[in-house]
Image (cartoon, rainbow, N blue to C red):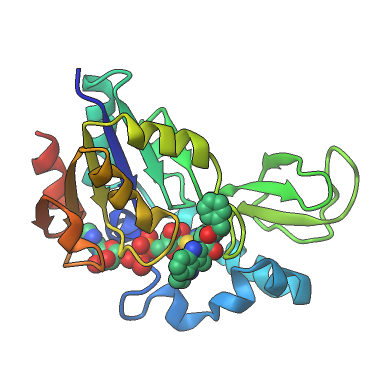
Length: 225
Ligand SMILES: CC(C)NC(=O)[C@H](Cc1c[nH]c2ccccc12)NC(=O)[C@H](CCCC/N=C(/NCCC(=O)O)S[C@H]1O[C@H](COP(=O)(O)OP(=O)(O)OC[C@H]2O[C@@H](n3cnc4c(N)ncnc43)[C@H](O)[C@@H]2O)[C@@H](O)[C@H]1O)NC(=O)OCc1ccccc1
């Protein structure tokens, strides 16, 4: 029975109205990554960082899953126990499309975390650093996202699933951020069949055996069928 690992990036949520990072007009053209997506930036100016994520959370609440998210949720239902979805996205559109098992390697926008004790809880609409932690009472609240320089979540689980998969598919990612950008190398080394689905060629396109170009909401349902 074939096992499949799917990696998704910002491109799969672009047609749901959530900006990508590096495309024209992308998030990193409007905000300085060092200021809003690093632990050092948060230490320097937590209010600026919370504004950034509160803005994205407000956006997410008005967004809906698109046919690409829905198609992957259907694949998970049709291939029970054989699909591992790893997303770099911090949005919850996969889950809202009905996907049950989603590995958020870069965290979740709808979650809050205590920088003191590490407790997690559901994020309020507007988060601020002074929000008290429900566990330790400290006021060190941060979004539960993985910033640059921080270790992504579930790396051991992800690497073990890539090691045993037959198919590795990458959807809507530019392949510029590690360790996610290294997964196709691992998959190739393990002999998996590798597939890229993206609007255009990415940094990693040459490493994939099969490629499909176009908007995710068109090419992903077609690939799943
Ligand atoms: C910039 C880059 C060079 N820097 C890094 O990679 C760094 C440093 C680094 C580590 N190793 C290296 C090796 C070499 C060089 C640098 C490094 N990595 C880290 O710091 C990572 C942590 C990185 C996580 C940072 N947090 C994010 N997000 C959360 C926050 C937030 O969201 O605010 S990263 C953020 O950017 C990443 C990449 O973005 P994409 O999703 O690919 O989006 P992008 O806009 O770039 O591309 C969109 C693509 O979609 C396509 N597209 C657009 N529209 C559509 C459409 N409609 N349909 C289909 N496709 C579409 C476009 O064509 C395009 O190709 C995403 O992961 C996203 O989460 N931590 C770490 O390495 O810890 C140690 C470690 C590692 C392993 C094991 C133990 C310890």
